Figure 1 (tube, rainbow, N blue to C red):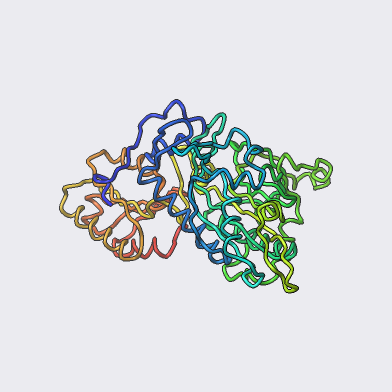
Figure 2 (cartoon, rainbow, N blue to C red):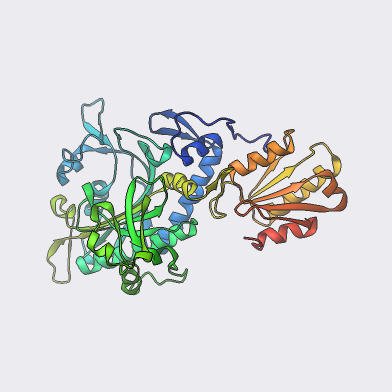
Length: 442
C-alpha cells in the first residue's frame, strides 16, 4: 500500500477528550473516529489490527476444540426472562421495542441465546463435550463511557460457551480455555496474568480474569512476581489431555483482583515477590454449572437414560478492548510499538526522495520483495520532509522501517530501523529482506 493512497488521517495535535495513552494514540494515528459517546468507527489502520487480533483469537479457540458460530446482536427478551436475568441485569442493557411491540435487546452477552441453540438441537451425552463461540459486537450502555475503546459502549467480543455432562467434565473444559487464553495473549505480545475474580452478573463460583499490568488500569490487582516471567504452554499442547498440572502450576501462586484480594495471603508472600499494581482486564472465564441450563431446560440424557441439565461455562475476550490494551502496554513517547503478530503493516519503506529514478526503483524492488516474502508493506511515497516521515512511522508503530534515500540508492544500501528498540543497521539492498524475514535484531 502506498501512503499517498492510504486512508490514514493522522492528527498533529492530541484531541482534548482523550484521557489515556491508547485513546490519544489511536485518534492521532487515524485508527478510529468517535461517532457518539463510547461508539467508534474503525478506520483502515484500526480495522486491520482488529482483524489481526481476531484471527489469533480464532486460531487458538479452534485449536482448543471450540467451534465457531455467529449469533445476532439483537435478541428477544423472552430468552432473558426464562433465565431470570432480564430485570436483574440493570440499566446497562439497551432495551428495544420493535414495530410489532415485541421487547428486544441489544445483546450485552449471549448465555441465553446459545443455551437456546443448544437445547433445540442436542439431546444426548454423545454430542458432548461441546464448545461454541463467536466473535460479535456487543452493547452495554455504560453510565460514563471513557478511555476510548477500553471502556466503550459498543465493543467486539469473542465469547465462547461450553456444554458438558457433569461438573468434572465442565472443569476440564474450563482448563482448556484457561490454557488457550494463556497462549492467545502470549501470541499477542502480552504478559497476561490469570487472577481469581468475582463472577458478577454472569454468575457461578469459579472465575478468572486475565489481567495485563498498566498504570492506566481500572482495577487494583495483586500477584506474585514470578507470574510475570512464567513460560506459557507450548504450541503442541494437547488440549484433550489432563491440563490440571498446567492450571495448578499457574494458580498455585497468589493472584487476585481487588474484589477477591486476601490481604493476609498476600502479605505471606516474601516482600520482594509482591506486586501491587493496576491492571487491565483482557479476558474473563467462568464456570457456572446449571445456572442457565436448568431454568431454560437445556438437558441431555446420560448413560443411564436420565435427562439432566448440562453444566456450562463462558469465556470472553474483549477483541476491540485488546487494541487499546496492547497500546497501553506497548508504546513510547513517539507513538505505538506494535508486536509483529498484530501490526497493521509489518514493514514500512520510507522513500526519502520520491521522483528520484534510482530511489524509486529501489523502493519498488523492496516492496515487491517483501510482499513475495509474505510481509505486509506500507510505502511512504509522500513529499513530506524526512523528519515528518520518521515521526509518522514512529507514531503508527510499524515494527520495521526500511529507509531509502538517494545516497543509499547510489551505493546499493538501505538503513533498517527496529521500532521496538530503535536499533539501526545499514545493509546492502540484497540482504535487507532476509534480515527482516529471519527476525534479526528482534
